[in-house]
Length: 114
Length: 114
Image 1 (cartoon, rainbow over the protein chains, first blue to last red):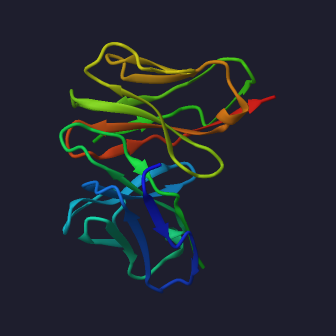
Image 2: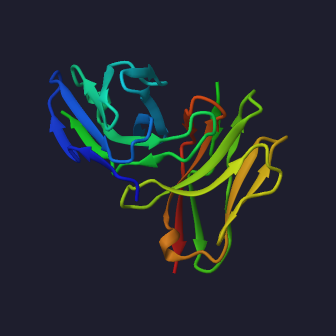
């Protein structure tokens, strides 16, 4: 299994509070991604990173920010959590640039915003 | 923009039988990759099979095979000799030839009946 961990694995928070989710990899892969999974929507890309301090938006980036100060860590921040951000969040990594390679996924974080 | 459509939200199959999951996609790109991921109740995302668009031969991995029809933009997954452990959500995914972004379908929930 690819070395990807996510923390926390479960979190319950209140509307309006900031939340940070962490993804940590031990594979030294260049690309890292944050997805959210919701019933009826599959997985949707929030943000991704193609290197340290290099990030870009995905299709559902509103309300989220990311940072990558080290190759191994990719942080997802909800500045002010809303109930619509209740979801399961997955981090993924991949290596290839020109050749699309497999994405390896972390175990997921279940976030509940009350 | 790329879109991936899985029109079967739920399916069931008898153990040892064969089942086919459908996936269609829309893209204007010529260089891309297609994937099927499995998500069992553990929530872990597991790659089942991968197909490069430039290859005419359909990919096969043990009991899993695909029917890739490039002109029709169709990418179905066939599971032969279904086993109880195949019970899971299955996601079809499209990967662009550059940039490493993935686009997922909404998933098909497969239940294998003993």
